[in-house]
Each structure stands twice: as C-alpha cells, then as structure tokens.
View (tube, helix red, strand yellow):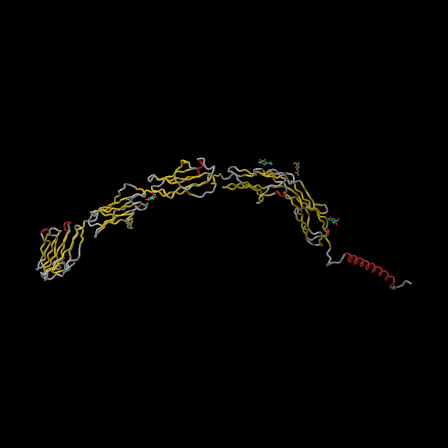
Length: 530
Ligand SMILES: *[C@@H]1O[C@H](CO)[C@@H](O)[C@H](O)[C@H]1NC(C)=O
Ligand SMILES: *[C@@H]1O[C@H](CO)[C@@H](O)[C@H](O)[C@H]1NC(C)=O
Ligand SMILES: *[C@@H]1O[C@H](CO)[C@@H](O)[C@H](O)[C@H]1NC(C)=O
Ligand SMILES: *[C@@H]1O[C@H](CO)[C@@H](O)[C@H](O)[C@H]1NC(C)=O
Ligand SMILES: *[C@@H]1O[C@H](CO)[C@@H](O)[C@H](O)[C@H]1NC(C)=O
Ligand SMILES: *[C@@H]1O[C@H](CO)[C@@H](O)[C@H](O)[C@H]1NC(C)=O
C-alpha cells in the first residue's frame, strides 16, 4: 500500500482501508472497515467500481448524516461513528472495488476489493470409465462443484492423495469449477474411497465417497497343503484348498496329472478325488484360478500324492483246542479286513518274534506255525500290520499245558524238637498241578499247597516227606521226597548216654539199698530167741 501525496495535497493509498479482498458468501452481509480514525466534520464518500463503470454507494456528510445511492437504497448504510460501510444481502454484482475518499485536513483515498462467493455445492466425482476398471489401466476422475474461486483437493479416505506428477496427476479446469485426477497403472487399493473437497476461502464441501472397483488378479494362487506325505489315508477328511487374491473373486478348476477333472470351487475334497477314481496311483494335483473380468488365469503350485486305504479289521486266530507241550502244534494267523498291508511283524510278549527251526513263518508272514510246542511258547502273541498311513494290532494269548516238572522238595533235613519248619514242593506246571503230601507213604490230610508248614516238631514228625504233583490236562505226575529227622536238643539237656548212666546208676543205687536193708536186717542184733 503505497502512500504518496500529490502536490495538491491529495494523498493516495494511505492506510485508510485494510488489505483485500474481502470474501463474502452470496446473500450474506458485509461491513467494510476503515482504518482512519474519523474526526468530526470529515466527509466519507464510498464509490463502487466494477472496473468499467462506477456508482455512488453512500456519502457521510460533515453534519454526521449519510445518504445512500439509488441502487443501494435499503441495502447500504454508513456507521456515523466510524464511517464503516455495511452492505446487506450481497448479490454477485456487488463484487468489485469499493473506493473510499475521505475529505478531511488532507484528502485521503483508498480502495478494497470485495468478492461475492457463490456457496460451494454439488461436489460430485465422476469416472471416465464406467463400472469396474482393470488393474493397471488409466482412470480419470473428475470432481465438479458449484461455487466460485474454488480449490479442489483429493483424499483417499481421509489422507490427501499424493500428486506425484507422474503416476498420479491433477489438473484444474480453466473455469475453476472442476478438477481432474488422472491415475495411471491403477493399483488395487488406489480407489477404495476417494473423496473430493471443493473449497473457497469461507467454506468447503466434501463429495460423497467414491468407490471404484478395481479388477485385479488372480494373484498369489496357492494350493494348500503344499507339502503332503507320499500317501494320504483314504476316506480321511483330507482336502486341497486353492486360494487367490482376485477381484472379482476367482473361480477354480482342478487338474489331475494335467487333466481337468471337472471339479470346481476352492476346495477339492478327498471324497471327490476318490469318487472320481483317482488316488490309486501317485499323481500331480493343481488348481487354476481364473478371473472372469481380467480374463487372466494363473496356475497354482503342484502337489503329488496317492491315496492309501488304512488297515482295518485286523483279527488273529490261534488254536482253540487244548495244547500240550511236546505233543501239540499251533498255527496262529492274522488277517485284515481292509487296507493294503506293507509290513507284518509278529511279537511275543512285546518282543519281536523271529522264525526258527521250530517257528515257521508263512511266506507272506500272515501266519506262524509252531511245530512242537514247548512250555516257553506260553505267552501273548501280537501281530502288527502296518502301511504308510496306519498301524493295527491284534493279540492272542496262547496257553501251552505242560508239567509238572523241575520238581523238588526243599527244606531242612534236620530240625530239633519243638522247631518250626517249611517244606516246599516247587513244581512248574500249566495248569497248576494238584499237590498231595505224604509222610512215610501215608497221605497227610488237607495238605494240598506247595508249602507244608510244621510247627513245634515232635519226634514222630520224622520220616520221609513226599510231594506228589499231578496235572490232569497233561496226565503227567511227579513225586519228590525229602527226609526229615527231629532230634533232641543238645546244649541244654543230657546226652542219651548220660541219661542211660543215670538210669543205671539209680537202678544200681536202688538195688544196693534193697541189699543193704536185708544185710542190715541180718546184722542188726535183735532179741535173740536163744
Ligand atoms: C458504529 O460503530 C460503533 C463503534 O464500533 C458501534 O459501537 C456502534 O454500535 C455502531 N453503530 C451501528 C448503528 O452499527
Ligand atoms: C502392469 O503394468 C506394468 C507396466 O505398465 C507391467 O509391468 C505389469 O506386468 C502389469 N501388471 C499386471 C498385473 O498386468
Ligand atoms: C464405498 O465403500 C465403502 C466402504 O467399502 C462403503 O461404506 C460405502 O457405502 C461405499 N459407497 C458406495 C457409494 O458404494
Ligand atoms: C500226543 O499225541 C498223540 C498223537 O497226536 C496222542 O495219541 C497222545 O495221546 C498225545 N499225548 C498226550 C499226553 O496228549
Ligand atoms: C495256518 O492257518 C492259515 C489260516 O487258517 C492257513 O492258511 C495255513 O495254511 C495254516 N498253516 C499251517 C502250517 O497249517
Ligand atoms: C516214619 O518212619 C521212620 C523210620 O522208619 C520212623 O522213625 C517214624 O516214626 C515214622 N513216622 C511216622 C509218622 O510214621
């Protein structure tokens, strides 16, 4: 704002008005302020200029009254205190320069621009491509709006779109009423929710969020599980799943060794594979994802496997008749109802059983034959059938009757009078042997256990103890004996000889006493009859 005074004393551009422009919304009021402090007697002259023509707006007279130009009747007024000009209900034609001339000690003059802005409305985004667009194509979005002196900004959701001048460019129209956003090589997420904001200095308005579907893909076409064991158990809930990122969603087709197997959908179940008769042999499986809109199709990774039926219904059969060691033989066989058996293992009591001269395995190992059963063949037999996807067992308990054998009576041979002792008849037998105890060949009643207990041994307990064991199944029996003698205690009592000595001595003493009596009787002087 330059201020200079002409030689006439007429000064121009003194700071009597603030810097413009003053923006006002159409229909609203505006008050133009004055920086100069009004003195009594000053004259204020407000004149409008549209650049070509001028018209008087209002004049404040020295007496403090003001008059309004014809065109401004009822709309313009001057505040008599400070000279401010107020205009009501602005019309677009009110845009222009407002000159103020103040006639005071010096004559001052200034001007301010007023812009009447149309309200911002009708902010709309349009696309040059109808409907969904292809990934990688170029799209031009146009945002138009009503209003004046507008500026446009583009947002993706709430974040301003970065106009990089290369992939994304922006160009505003000459008339200032629209803005063009050009996006090359459209990315998937470029156009999720675009908003255009149209604004002037006083107000702004957002467009409705604009969604443009970008068709893309299929990409990242993945078949899972990607790692599969060589064999998959038949009838399990195994399935293959194909996924892809694609818009619109991809459709899938499935291939078995390069051949379309007429199965669709993202999941190929084992059920379908088996129903179509596949799986018996190893084969490659893959899926192809297709996007109908982009007309692209992409092949997944390949997985290879075959289907194996798990083993089931395993049963074991052994001899049902009574088996006798040394006489019977046994055939144990193991069968499965379903499944392909890759390995057969026989176990006895949990340990691997191997063929021997006595134990013969059939060529397919489905049965074992034991030629002459021995007592050692008693036990639990297990057949274990397995393939890659399963392992099944069956058990058979074999009872081989034998015995009685390895047989003896153990216990002390000599005990002292009053001692306790146990005699044990140890015998091996299946089924357990029936036991009888005898002394000197006479059955001891109610003694049928392996252990015979004697309490407080007496002389009469001495003798030959015999255990007789019999096995009703094998028809075998066995006996074993042990001699027991019950003796007098030595430390505390007298020996047999001493006892005899005492007896003899007593007898001698008694005999002597009797002799002495008669001797004495002869010798004792009595009243003699002589
Ligand atoms: C004129 O301006 C003065 C001071 O700013 C103010 O107090 C007064 O109310 C105004 N008068 C009118 C009629 O607006
Ligand atoms: C997208 O275009 C670029 C070059 O413009 C190209 O290299 C790329 O392969 C295209 N991508 C797709 C998915 O079409
Ligand atoms: C645009 O997408 C957003 C979110 O996906 C949704 O809320 C909105 O309703 C969509 N607008 C139109 C016009 O489809
Ligand atoms: C042994 O087998 C033979 C022939 O099979 C039979 O005659 C005999 O009775 C059997 N012996 C026993 C103890 O079972
Ligand atoms: C054992 O039994 C199986 C099944 O019953 C049979 O196939 C096999 O021939 C038999 N083996 C012998 C040695 O008897
Ligand atoms: C058994 O015989 C022995 C020797 O012949 C004899 O001393 C013992 O008293 C007999 N015991 C019984 C209980 O008969």
